[in-house]
Length: 594
Image (cartoon, rainbow, N blue to C red; front, side, top):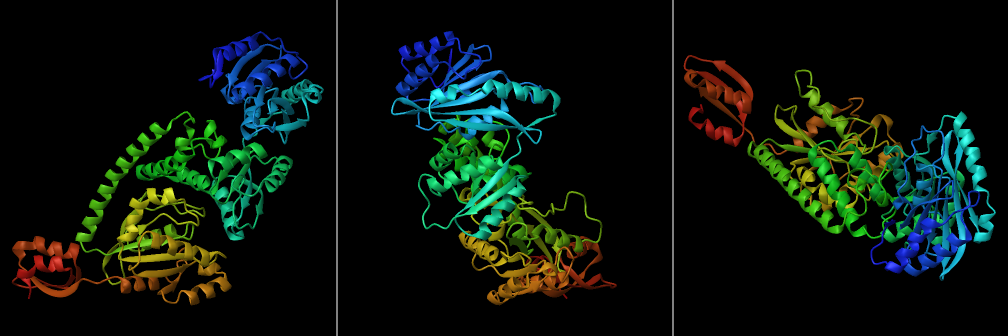
């Protein structure tokens, strides 16, 4: 049986592939001359990779058209102290034998005896690369060897290394090397690259180094140029780096080219942000929005996107819809996008109903906006707690954490301002530089809370050296959302840890906005913030006096619930109440005006 992509292959070629099962391979050598010549000839003929799995006895266990992951073999648990006893020999018709990230991942995951790549150049065999497992820091990793031709490769004693490793495995407690160690690459600016490191940290990725290149235009094939990519590849091998993260969005061909050249998995900033969103989404709406953004990002990249879509399993880029194999075709993905969009529209309808109900009650709406991890959730929880006369219920507060995108789910709670008025306070998703377009589109229904607000409290982290850039990013995204005429109050947060130089520049350059200096964590100047919030909100209430007869005492309760009582006196003919009321409440009680 021939596994993998056998469509459109002539029967005569399939027959020759079937005959490979009859080959008897040498136990000590990587492969026989007969197998080498056959693979080069057939792979050149069909211009596809051919993989062959050979056991330690020299028997061919599987033949596949495609890459090494299409070969069926038993998965050896890490706890078993032995190798798989299988080596994979496969062709690279692209002219280079360099082992890809997928090859090396398969080598370590399946504990292969070896993985061999045979380069084909102009129909003839060229260089050969061999990967074997190795042990370092009590983890199974890989060692890669390159040979200029098959004769040199045949001299390599791979079996000696395999048997030595098996002896080590018997006396050492080892675990599979699944930790992701990243190298960061940027072409924009240092601050953006630092933030990329924070995003990686939020995903639990260890960063081993970074590189910033100044260039006017990205290279169409490798983004940073082939020469620089080769330098980074050498660094990755020396430092056991298995993940490259680019600070800008890459095309499918750039990902594929970089992975083939460097031999490590390659992702971009967009995938990293989508991964964080996928891990942090809690509500049904947030999960739908994230999956929708992931599918929209991946749909145009289905043909040729790198390892992150080619195989299932752990690691960045495999959460949510990424766990489905690449065989999922465009039609199915489009159908799923349609289903998710419909579900989101239903949720959006419910949200609009709730918003209309709040607007009809004339309760002012306040939205907290700002960059991710500036303290919006901490401030929201503090303002809500201060407006309560009892202990907050568990689950009513939102997550506070020193991490990027701690809050994805929009929450709205009622608060009481210092002038006695009620208002709704909404904590929104944090913004970030280069926020993926598909993510903004998916979260637009959530961000409509911002569009409809009567007041925006823009929270800025003045302890950050990037505070000015962060403020500009948020303002730019607010313009994209067509938020122009809504009053904005700048809440300059974390003044207890302020970067003085940045703080002074920020206050001077943004003096066209009302500002208040606060610390949500230390509860500094919170009353001043509440006073300024009340002053910027439209006040549609009026003061009126009512005499409510005792036989309609329900109207007295209505005044207490919806109005602000200034004074109350019980008289012979009824209850005299002086209160601040909305126009709607005023009209309801017009018959009882004094």
